Amino acid sequence: MARKRSFKNSVLPTLLTYAGLAVGLVFAAFPIVWMVFSSLKSNTEIFALPPRLLPDDFTISAYLTIFNDPTKVRFFINSYFVAGVVTVLTLFIAILTAYGFSRYSFRFKNTLNIFIISTQTVPPITLLIPYFGMVVAFRIFDTYLALILTYLVFTLPYAVLLMTGYLNTLPKELDEAVLVDGGSSWTALWRVIVPVSTPGIVATAVYTFLLSWNEFLFALTLTKSMDLRTVPIGIQLLMGQHAFEWNEMMAMSVLGSLPLLVLYLVAQRYFLAGMTAGSVKS
Amino acid sequence: MNRSITALAPAPPKAGKKGRLSYKTLRKLVPYLYVTPATLLLVLLMLFPMAMVLRYSLMDGAIMKRDAAFAGLQNYITIFQNPVFWQSLYQTLYFTIMSVVFHFVLGLAFALLLNTNRVNPTIRSILRVLFILPWLFTAVIIAIIWRLLLDPNGVVNSVLMTLHIINFKVEWFSSTSTAIHALTFANIWAGYPLFMVSLLAGLQGISKELYEAAGIDGANELQKFWYITIPQLMPIIISISLLDFIWTMQVFPLVWMTTGGGPIYATEMLSTFTYKLAFAQYEFSLASASAIVILIISMSVTYFYIKHQQRR
Image (cartoon, rainbow over all chains, first blue to last red; front, side):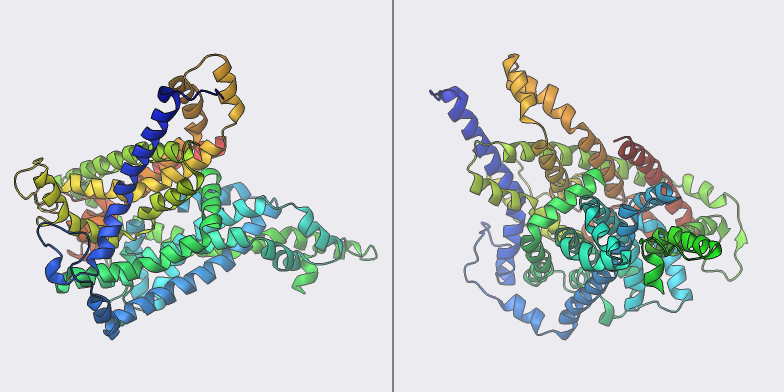
């Protein structure tokens, strides 16, 4: 490092870096900030001219409207329920599969691995048509079960790849210690491996929850009654019903994004590490 | 019972030959037991439906008719003769390629900015979180945020008019000339963080010695970037580009919630085209043929993705 920090070699690049970051920040965050403040405006103020970021008078009336409407509260309950069940089921099945992949070699292992990687990329629209036929045929149209089963198919491949990636980083001596003591691999998995896999499990859980919370196409097509609609569909319905209740739609969007933001911030460390391990190496 | 089967500990030597053999066989089964639930589920709910959609696409009046007849490739011919299909294909490719290119450019730019040590570490870690935010939003919410911002009376028009860049209120999502670009822009905003996060991880994995050695040889920053950074990041760039391409091609909620494929067919994508065939016109056989075309495109890109992953 040179002692003398000349303007051209040190100060200027630093300034440019900060300037670039500032532009990036506006690009990334402005739409979100605008959404949050719009949810705190009265509906007449949304398109005020000239546009103002901060509302003249803050009001939480849009939020109160949502909380006082049982139909809208139900959208949230449905989303939490479906995403919660899908996350638990996905984790359980993915942990078993990942353990099999990570600790054993067996025939068809590579075929199965390729199969799971390629299922990641199957277009949902291709599966939607047969799912619709199946769901009607099995009389589970417009039920939670229809959503949970179809979501599992999309969460499972990611979860298996993320968990396998994580388990591969754990030393084999961990389970061998249990096996030498006469324990079964089942014991090794649940008593030793799972407890030390918190980062991988948290990352997988957050990602699974995010995928099911955000799902739109299947929820739109495989459910029909208001009692079973999830948040994304609820927002869509709100848009169709009263096209001009912008503050309410923004409040709904804030509430609909909140669980993901909270989960992300809590699990940030695990999440990024897990995601990159999964997406970059899988 | 299960526990003794899965144990790796050697069987008691006293066991007879027959017993030992079955024990060995059973032990070989253990890995299969672990992977069975996922495999079963994926075969039943992934492979089986794919076979079904293929069958539908070769029938006349699938789902709607009780005994639908075999129709050969007729549905594919009908689809290929529909100009809207070709327009949707073209628009899907435009939307996808533009999105992937700009996701990469922005993702790389932000990753490089966040990776320098010119910036205070605290600011850097706060910014890292803020820059990822767009990624966490549901497509439906992204759609209505941009509908609000790009409303003819919205803030974007207002700012652009104040700056005299435009002189009338542009109807971004409802004009045939701007809708596809507005949609692509919203998607670029929503999708760059995947590249950013992956490239940032990649940048942190590049050995400092490479840069030091190049510095000794007299390489300037641009040369270091071009001859070290880019080649080192290449595997990540390729795999994320391919994944992003596949996922962006499947876009549905963003289009459905902003333009619905319109005005006229200006933003019709393969996904909305297929969806409308199935669930607005109840032409499930035609929709299946179109869905198979989408699957084939996806699978051919997936093939390169897997080949690339396995080479590493």
